[in-house]
Image (cartoon, rainbow, N blue to C red; front, side, top):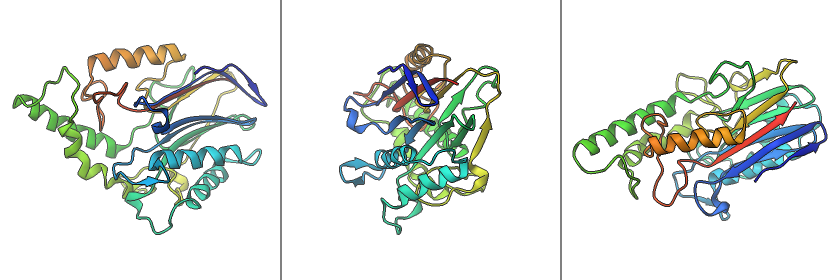
Length: 279
């Protein structure tokens, strides 16, 4: 849906959330706006199949992060905010849960009082003058898994086992990459060559929390989950680019290269959330 209006110091121009499945209760992305903060949260896809209550791990982590943002103290700094998010999720999961199995989420927050963007993981942002893709980081581990998946699919297509121009119920590339995807959580919140940041109830190294000071002359800011390969200056532009790329690359091995494609019954390869603010 779209929304327009001001809440405290934050003025929303557009906001939109849509899951890749028809059932909205399965969506793991969210937009949260309070008087001082605006955030997009992307719960990580859980390949284990484990449920927390009736929720997937990604939705469980997203819900915890949403509640933490709503309760965040006024004028918090980035590291205080990340600690609050971490502690809220830690309270909701068994501390003995192995790192690779922990529910987790990526999040990008705009602090209106500090005029800063805080980024933990791969939820992206964009404003006029920011170098292209600078605000849309990608995990090295995801790039590796995406390349491996694409190679498996290329081999399957060459053998005549799949048709790369049509969607299918089965993704042999995803199945092949699962060995890495299912284990990469152990690398979350580590600072090695394959490390990456995420809210998972464990401390996030300060070096992995990106803090961006927004220039004084910037008047609009867009934040979006990685369900949008390109963050447009408007929701319509973002949706149009996504639709064009999905038509060109439904298996997500080329322009949309990723760890999963668009399966039958899905509207996209991932949930998506978009937020545009006047700042």
